[in-house]
Image (cartoon, rainbow, N blue to C red; front, side, top):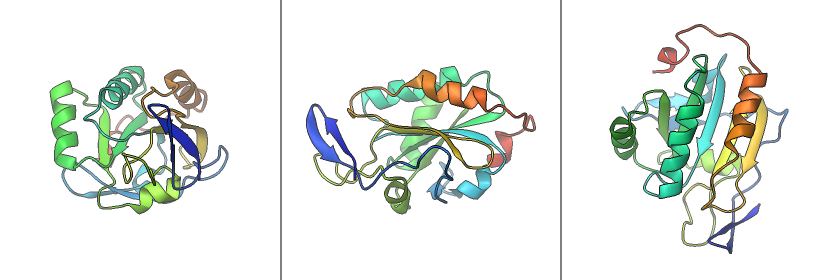
Length: 181
């Protein structure tokens, strides 16, 4: 269990983030078309896993936009944005914001995602939602960067996550994004 804050008030997560150098636990999420997306679907691809409480908050929305902007030239890496928001809301947000490269995925059917990655908030006003965190994975599903943002209302360290992805560059097929859809 990790302690972070929400507006300066302590809150706790369900565990600890995966450690750099270790595999991300297997997971499933729900896509905006209601099909499942599993970690196995991401094999062979570098992934920025941006995790956050809800797109309905300014910081979460800003974070998604910023990661989308910073990964624009990384055609062989995926940006997977995960929250407990319903897939319909995620789809609407990405469409409205023109975030074509972002792959929104919901944990609403898969609460084990947050528990296994140690990011489910277990107390406080956001209990049941996901903490703000970033996990970057190489093409083998190994963690190359992990950050649990210490204050939920703060943005993550974008540059550290993007640096990790860029420094683990191994060319993938140009259709890396399309092959997960």
